[in-house]
Length: 168
Image 1 (cartoon, rainbow, N blue to C red):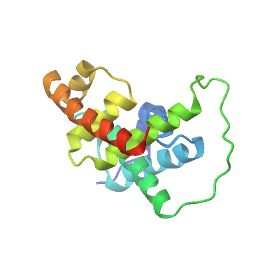
Image 2: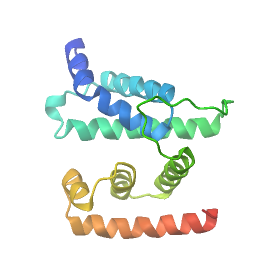
Image 3: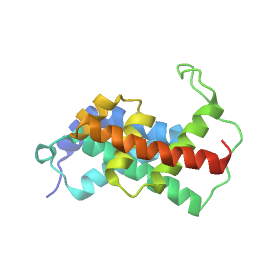
Image 4: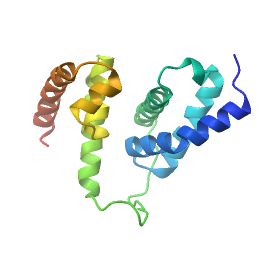
């Protein structure tokens, strides 16, 4: 099944900004986020998903974006490129310690890589990265809040162990 130009345009209009923001948060660099955004829509075209047949298109695009970003992170580790020490921030970027952001993003990424359970991975991203409440995560994933609570307890154990080993 092929996706029409109109469908791609409509999907980009509806989900492009959301996908870009997710990629920017994960990757931390505007250029990489733009590359990831492009790759997400290439995959959308390549695999020919008709959004009418997808129960939750936002969730589908989130998942594709996350997988794309984590693939890029893994690839960058395998083939590191030299980078500049300086990083530019836009005027409207919230003032948050860049070091804190990097550490938080790195911890979330490391824990994500350690988790084998796809549900736990999704809970980790929605709760720790996106800042959703347990109730919101439960609604987003379609499971009970108690299940989310249990997954978060296991994730917290991973985080505690990681921080202890890393000296963070």
